[in-house]
Amino acid sequence: MAGPPCDPISRTEPREHQRSATKTMPDALHIASINFREDDGSLPTVEFDQLNAESVAAVYRFICKHGRCVSDSPTVWDNNEQVDVPLMLLDDPCRWLRDGRIDSFHCCFGGISVDGTVIPDLGLFVFKDAVQIDYRMGTEWNAINVDAFFRMLAYLKSIAPESKIKSAESEGLMDEESFLTALRPYLTEGGRTKP
Image (cartoon, rainbow, N blue to C red; front, side, top):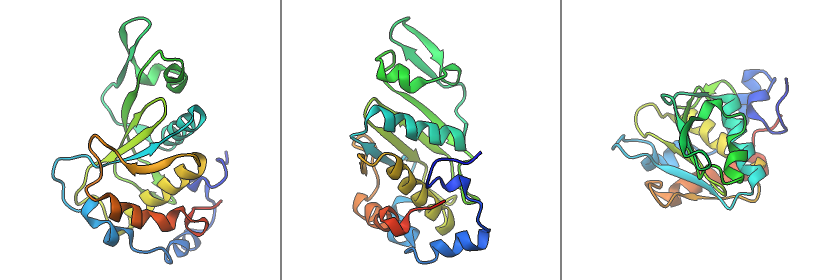
């Protein structure tokens, strides 16, 4: 089943052609290396802010569709029933969020692949008007999977065009300026993954 336009997972081109499209991209890891290189125990977090409800749901659905939950039994607090509810049992947690039944939710996802390149595990914190994506720095990151991560972020921006990408306020990026400088070419039309 084909994904939405620009969906990097639905690509059917030969891998050689897919890779050649990224050869013109700058070395994102080199530019933004301080945000990836050494695991200091923090979780750098990039935020998609100023989202509408449809975009929050679209970002969450993309990550769910292309990854798998690796959190150990994540739950959400049901404001109506005043109990914890297993997140993965909810058909549409974003609707619960929109309706005020839950305030936010978090889950870690593994196995997200962009054009055959697996991205290290990502944490997804979903709010009513924002989505935060966190990751652990360290040796798992290399030029190839950082490129895939940035292409995924560009795709998410394309399905949430009203969003503002920034460092999260709570536990943000090590160096927001270098991260956004490395990301900027991916956000241009030439940098987006295309079907």
